[in-house]
Image (cartoon, rainbow, N blue to C red):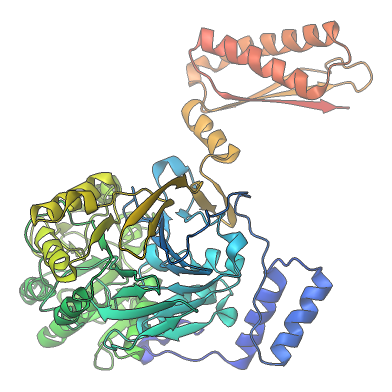
Length: 638
């Protein structure tokens, strides 16, 4: 794929891969995908597949934890629903599994950005360990929209499941392609484009049909999904939504279609609980556009920097229209923002004149008067290297915040990220910048339904059973209360945890299994994959709490006597005025423990000797300085 930054000045366009780039990417996939066969056999199979221009499905050796758990037998005529990830999380790894007979369908496949207890990990993904054994039956993944908490785990999930076919709308598919391309998996992916305005039923496998219909959110081309099975199950799956009668790009939610679907005796509704705490209606994008226009029109001094999420395409369109009207020039900062704008323009979701948006560079930006500059930048609240964060720390390669610049936070604070957000705001204020947030003026609106919107959807869909989703128990309980307040039977509201099993019977009753599939928090740590309770994370936790003490012995191989002095290295354990005293104490104890143990048990194994040294030193330090560091004895035989 071309470098979007280099192409911005020539108008944002999308370019097909050249044959050379395609061959290079396929070769890299070939070299990196682990196969069950030998390396020679794998290469032959890939080469034949490429020569015959047919699909090759990589059969990777999964790094997910091994499990012997099997799904309980599904009774004839029953439809199964299993939430895999989205409960007890916000900004979470959304995924849901549906089963009828031997067909299994996944909806969405997202990531959850790292929690503080993940200690250095990048993010977590859904645990599909129990599903890998059913990879020959999981052939379809349906995607509701292109946010990372709904598509970000695809590059990890697709290979071990043998690359299921992806169903999604046009914009969603193109953004997914960008992600899979970076993971060198695009050549092996299969897509089916669906339309949110089509009333056609899409056949999914042998037993499922799906209908996709229009809703509003904070990115274009979002859909709800109606799944039907021969077992008389009709399931409406909303994920994220709001009701906006005046959106910036999309059409308003198709309420008449939703009402018509609700007349079909819906068995189960799964619906977004994120906005459950907020009363009334969420603000329309039109209101936000009007507020932003007032700020931009009246801004006559210094620069204006607007921070928003890179996926908020409608906000970019509003800014394009406003800046064109008032003679301002937009500069874009942040690679993900540039790429999403390029895709949206190519597909017709963004309308702009040539030169309306330029890439930000010191040379180009100097050609425009400060008060005519509107800089649109990415803002990832969980990422220390996002463009705005780098600006606040004077680490951005093209821009430094100067006194009286105005920064608008046209985004919501993701729950749990408040501290990092306020940290960046404080840094900007320390640079004498003006800061405007949605608490000061209407510069942002939520993409999730408030209580009154939730009531409208519950009434329109009118399901027999209701499963609040997407959020922790507090948010889902509030959504339950909202449903009960409009007359929904409390006993028909299901508050289920991740990996709980719900079976819908043909007679419209619900069976909640006592069996719960085993799951762990699967984390992505650089290029590695592991679990949140792994020895690596536990070791990091201990290091964070108590720090590290390394004891290095140089020992004669034959006599096992210590040669020279024991070397002691400590990191973040003792204060400067304690170093001599603590190291002297540790040195004496380490020497005594080693010599006494070897004297008493000459043939002791090294692992047992190390364990004794650690235990005795831990007891000493706890008694003397009330600290319990990670102690690492190392014995070097010479």
